[in-house]
Amino acid sequence: MVRYKLLIEYDGTDFHGWQLQPDVRTVQGEIEQALQTVFKDRLRLSAAGRTDTGVHAAGQVAHFDAPHFLPVERIRGSLNALTGRDVVVHAVDEVDETFHARFSAQARQYFYRIALQKTAIHRRLAFYPGQLPHVPAMQEAAQCLMGSHDFRAFSKKIPGEKHYLCDVEQVEWFREGEMLIFRIRANRFLHSMIRLLIGGLIKVGKGQLSPQQFAEILHSRQQNNTIYKAPANGLCLEKVYYPRHHA
Image (tube, rainbow, N blue to C red; front, side, top):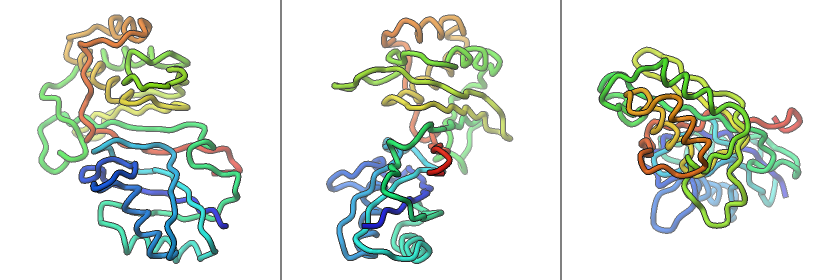
């Protein structure tokens, strides 16, 4: 068996998320179907993170075990020829069997795009909240996310979840043209966590919550019905970090 690592970009708009599901188009299903053509065998992908319906990725990482060796450039070229235009495999690397796309990852980095004016061209990649938010208040509120916290107030409850602790290493707001970008890096993310955080931060930006109230919701460890989940189209998995020997 030979283990390969993939670096993948995709526009999640027309996918029902990453994870394989019957009778719907998923990123995993699209690539696994292409792999079956390339290797003449049914292979299974493991990803660094399972993005939801409509969520994008600039740097998703996945791995698979192949029954025999093929040159990495041949695999990359074949996958890009066999998948839709909304999926691109940027790199294929042969890795040792100790590498695991999910369990070897040390951190994951996402960004969320907010359009500062209504847009047609970027409507699939950014959320337009309909009102120019007050950015300094959002920046102030976001600082309470740094460090290790219990994020159950900003996550969807999942049966069997062992804990809700996440270690946030970086959080920032910055502007690129007519886009306001929120970037966050942490060792792990809970289900719907970033989209709920964005929903809360937008309420801060609109003056519906103060930065102090936002922090109080986080520390309460209780879900708050006033917090809404921001749309999926603004969210993108930007990068996955691994130890140097697996980079």
